[in-house]
Length: 377
Image: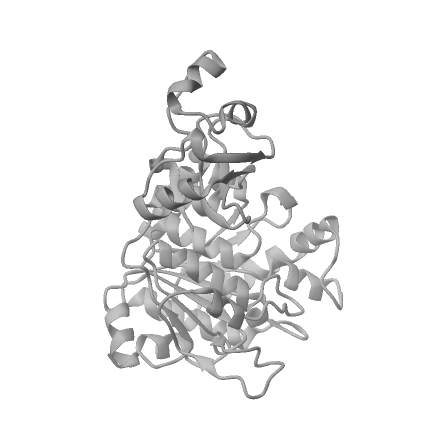
């Protein structure tokens, strides 16, 4: 199938779109890049008029604050970052509001931390707020709440946040705008012979090696972060297009099925919304090393993790916490919610399920992690 035909097939069923706009797109040397913002707002408004439901994930608060404070580089410590974001966030949302008003569009600001999505009630509240705004034909503009965020509740970057938001709102497509044309076979900023990759059927280790982890002056992530976000989205059955947000009429060109940017195809079998939440929203609190037999039945047969397959427990965690399952060489196999705390697993690891009660004096479950709460990575 030709690339244009494939893109038409992918985009034909799209109704709900998450558009992520990076700091490198939004920011010029003398402040916010108003012509670029205007162009993107025009394209988003056109999608909105055509009946698409659009949610925007926008970076730029710290970058906008840097310009207002005349900082030449991004602050290093968390307190300075929080203060810079506080200075810049108002400027950023005001810029969006003025730009969208030209097209008779209303916008709403939503600031999130990982805590808002790991807590199930707050997760549902965030979801309901976004759905209500979309129903009111208001365009939500979402950013990480850099003003209050601490390291342990950070999303990492807005590439990761856009993947979580897309799963939350059950998007049909994510467009990730950056300041390069897409994914290349090597870093085009360092190698003039780099060739663009227009289609990625599956994110493999080789594809991840192609992605540059270099970070711009204003951004927090690099191309590797965007590719890893696309990988998460593919697991949820959501395609991603990484494209240059500074190109003229880029949104129109995408929906005219031009071969622009890099298209990442979704997996045929998608994770459920709940399993995506387990795999990518929760912060793992520890690790469980498993033997070859447990690895095989988890990967090949979709089975639960039993005590007999556990070799070692790392970290302290409680019942219901998210924990990574690692192979004997330390490779990440899966992530899931544990039925026993770390001290209990230390006592029963290697045992048969029939021996759990004799060892602990009680038994909650046969499984350390039930397959319904286990996500293969």
